Image 1 (cartoon, rainbow, N blue to C red):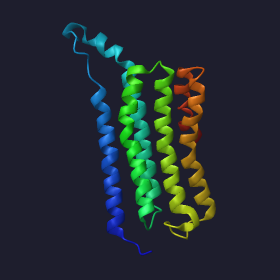
Image 2 (cartoon, rainbow, N blue to C red):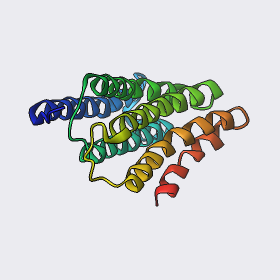
Image 3 (cartoon, rainbow, N blue to C red):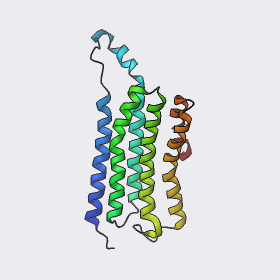
Length: 191
């Protein structure tokens, strides 16, 4: 398989655009209620605190998925149509995250909303892990000079976020707030 830099660059540019649009769409859900009074706007802004939190969490997670996508693509040397299809699946998951965030904003205390958000995040992470695994398996699309140990480490790192989000779904059954707090363990694990 011949290296096609222009084709690979187009995949990266398209991916970057989807990430950017998804992050931008997150802010659309941040709106003051129609009934907001000018003299009580500070109270209305304060009541929106859970929405700001959901926005911030999703912004950071999408941003981290973009950073990770960018980092992993440093090792990708070639592509094939299966790789493009998996990347497309990843981008579909990324594009769904603003909706998952709006559900969490509106129903953040409900188990099903927290579980749905975690499921969307887990699906995104699983697609990213699958993308890397497909590219790295037997050095299919990466440089053969990348050590097997480094490939395994990168694969394990890719699997951490979806595993945490999947575990949080079980936690949601008992305590939705604890499930949301468990998501911070991703940052702790990488720190």
